[in-house]
Length: 386
Image (tube, rainbow, N blue to C red; front, side):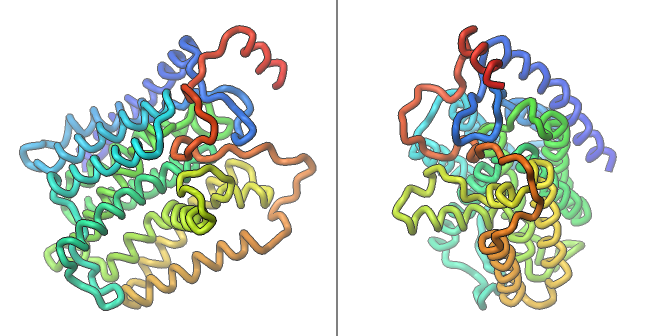
């Protein structure tokens, strides 16, 4: 327990002191995410929060997780470095969806083939148990890439991705600690500590955004932890076995997964790229119902907590029935958001234009850089507009 507290505390302290320095550097170098018609924020804001998150949890993990005892972690960190620099480049310079996809495949390959982490069984979901090797690999790649993008896409409202990430890290950290898997618990608590520090600067109105360097990385470690959870949580050797492990694992990531699968499906069926921008995310629907940034983030957090509770207390139903229950409840919630026309909260002033999730979308107009240096004329124009 002492190691967990130290790891989380060190990650928190490093990130807490790193973020203000990153904000100052962004101001000095005029490196900002510039608002436009698609974005919610009204003034230029740095989108390099992922640098502070990565620095905090990575250094804390290097201090407390031994690569000799847990050799797979060197590959997890190698994949994290690939994803971090991929996201950092996209925060500063626009990269194509193809290049980003190739980078995500590379990270997934490191985790699967070198880290030895993959889905080899469905644990009775729809009557399926052991999977053929080829299907197992395909499903593992798909799951990792889907979860990475899920947290990238959900990062569209101040505090939302950070709060959901903090929730999942807390759940995984507590479970792996109880199950006696200290290294995975340390990993979860260190990232949770960094996210907690980041949220101090990311609550509305945000002083800094997570950016792709943060959201892609949070998605990567959620993918690692949920795959590990699914592979071990139902085995008799674990001190705390969990029934219906697949739907329970899905429930922990429910809101980002639900949002991503729904949005990707709509875009593909509409004949568009799954990475094309729109304002059809869950957080956009909640904003349209009159909720503020803070209320949207809290609503998604509480809803994800509800799904986790529903899955945990309903795990005795069996994986198939529980999965169908989760899907039914999720689509019921979406139905209310889409077809209930009245706002949940009345507003006397119109809502601002919404910004899309940072980073993953393709842009219709070629742009040299997402982080634009502001000269004195642009700065004056921004202050006059505000």
